[in-house]
Image 1 (spheres, rainbow, N blue to C red):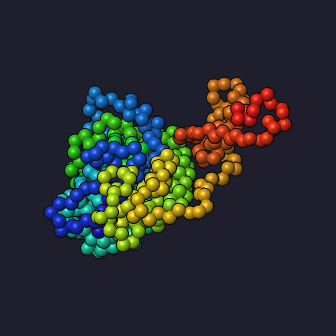
Image 2: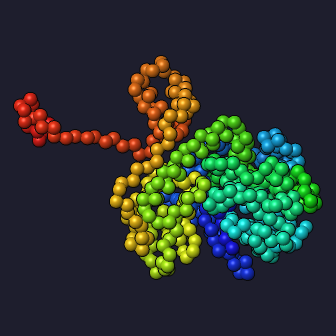
Amino acid sequence: MAGDGGSGSGFCMEIDVRAATIARPHGGPDAQGPVRWDFSTNVNAAGPCPQAVQALARADITRYPDPSYHALRQRLAVWHGVDERRILLAASASEFIQRITAVGERLAPAPVAVPALAYGDYAVAAQACSRAVVGAEDATATLRWCADPGSPLGQDAAPPHDPAATPTVLDAAHAPLRLRGAPCWSSDAEDAVFRLYSPNKALGLPGIRGAYAISPAGAAWPRQTWCDALHAAEPSWPLGAHAVGLLECWTEPATQAWLADARITLRTWTDSLRARLADLGPATCAQRDAVSLRAPAGRDSARSPAPPRLGRAGHHLVWPAGLDARFGAATGGARSAAQRLAAAGHRSPPHLQFRRNAAPMIPNIPELNDATLRSTLQARVDGKIKPLGSLGRLEALAVQIGCILGTSSPRLDQPQLVVFAADHGLAAQGVSAYPSDVT
């Protein structure tokens, strides 16, 4: 069974639930430290969110937070439009996964249902409680995990046939980074399950841990008994000052506006990454919000030389037998990282079997005639502290760049100036005082 990709990284792992222990591979830094080009996580590549960074700077770390977190619970409840008593706080998504699995073992001991591709901690928590792990449709389960968008491919994941029949958790870690389409879950289906939120990924700040869940409004099982047990099992001060600041900032209109703008940027980057990978030739899995590569069939990865290190150890361009190597599953990665990936592919050893196309690749360019975006960009330029139009053609250039990048907050990574020169032959007509080799 596969795991690791929901609230953690974008990678899958094969889990033997009979083993005494389960390794917990995650994206991001490992014992070798961070890498510059990291495709191993689903963190928002357009981050970090500046509003969230400012909120962290204002956090008062000289005092304990309110142990009841009354103001935070109230803020989250108002933002989601639910009763404050339905808010459950957690030190992280992984902490909540462990807690509800342990609580479920006491209240309804039976297997845990996990999707075929899912975050590995679901199975890890089940094994820690001596609970069997079964498939998503197994009727013997008394705790069921779902994720929409699914992980690690970002695919749509429809709700179970009867969400209220079994204690179910909908992991919404990637929901804020949905780049296209609409959720599969109706509001009634969402209200029948626990909804787990961990905004640090969407805000580009995975180093800040903090999460919360919304308990079901109604269910066919003893919902209140579960909620009381989850509250009782909550550690003291599960959230530090920085986590409180992050979750409070999450509900601010300015933060959500930044996130909406970031999704436009991420769509552009993801489309560009797909175009670059298509030029390299390996099988490309074009999921809705994901891009993946598949190693050539029949290749023995154990005897092949190591590819360029673009992620954490073991997370390279080539993935072991039968699995995909997934890069920036939810976001496609930053533009500079996509360029690095493409460059690495062109320098890769022969066993990668990349195919070069004879024709040069022209990256996809988004629609430039977006009147709303152009108006927003012009308003931002006009709103600067300067006389209107005082920067001349530079202002028009800024608006044009914003339209090309598809964002109201354009930023050029590694801008370059191209100079063209040619011998036009006029020097031979005697019009210049100097020969053509110096003009």
